[in-house]
Image (cartoon, rainbow, N blue to C red):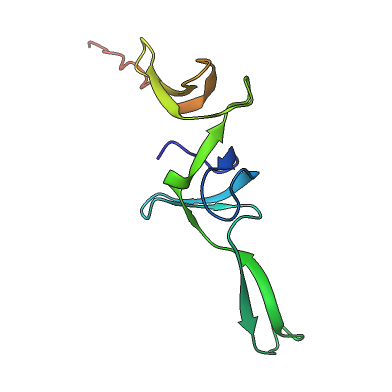
Length: 117
C-alpha cells in the first residue's frame, strides 16, 4: 500500500465524499485506513472505573483504501500515486498528474565493500 500515515487524502465515495483529511492509521493487511473525521460511529460505553461518565463515545472507523485518493502537496489535486525507481535502486512515490516527489518509499541498499586480505 502506497498511502502512509500522515498523508492528506480526499474521500471519493460514501457520506464523506469530497472531504480532505489526514490519515491517522494504516492497516495494510486489511487494505484499510483510518481517516480523521471520516466514518465516525458511536460506541456505547457502560460506566466503569476507566470511563466514569459512560454514554456514547464517537470514534473513527476504517475505510477502504480504494475509496480515497492522496492529495499532492505540489499541485493540491487528488491523484493516484506512482512509483519511480532511481538509478541507485531507491524507490519513491510520485504524483501521477504533475510528477512531483511525494516521499521515499524504499531507501537504496548500501553497496557492499569487498575487502581482500
